[in-house]
Length: 75
Ligand code: FES
Image (tube, rainbow, N blue to C red; front, side, top):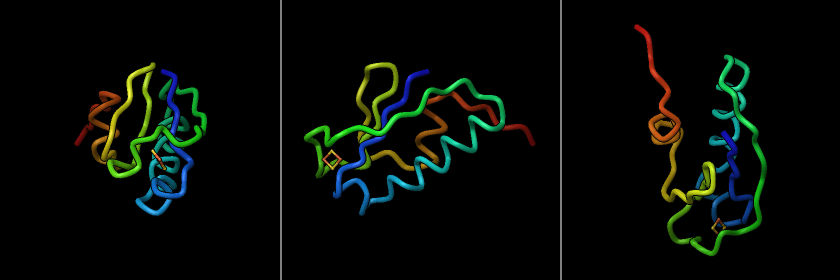
């Protein structure tokens, strides 16, 4: 999957770094991800904004990111 995380200041303040950390963690665990930073998507009030395979998602948290990527958890 191609994932672009907004590197704009508003998304940064809302936690984009935590999204990047979660993406790196998933990639290291074997998830096939191409991770890029992006300029502001113009949806700052709805950050953190993340584009996944061309589709923009807003209000992304690390938990929501896992749902969007279809991460299955084992217990
Ligand atoms: S700063 Fe992220 S959408 Fe503008």
